[in-house]
Image (cartoon, rainbow, N blue to C red; front, side):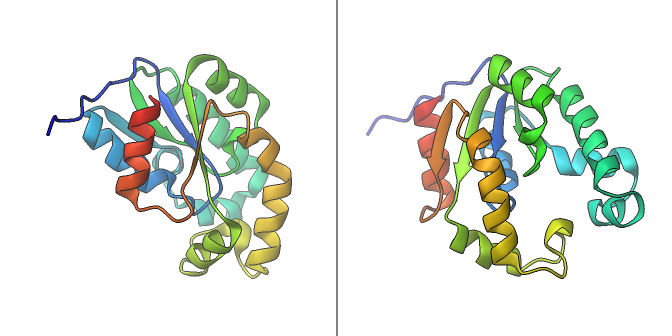
Length: 174
């Protein structure tokens, strides 16, 4: 059996999608497979702010978070040959979206909302879902964000797939 030849992209690969769609997990594993760097925008924001995202939302508000998210994302996009996991709302920013669509390989990790709900119930780290009806919020975000997510160069439905199947599908599309 012949070994799969890995085609390392020259452009940044940016994973987009709703919270809980697997951007961080897939991004980390994909970067190991391709032997290139991985950045998680949310983790970079926490490093820069020196506090957790949930605390940024609580103390500074969503507007401050979104500005920091934009700044960190644009800085990360200056890299080459990296995998970047964008935050769920990061692709809503027009400047960020244009940069990604014009200069990167964008991949939408599309996931069924019922599966997202099950994943998001398991964590308390999602400030936009705190003390809210998770299903209703996910439906609301989907209505707002789906049209932008659908502009990605590649769409991978991750709903019923293992991370290994998802990574294989991404590699086949690169």
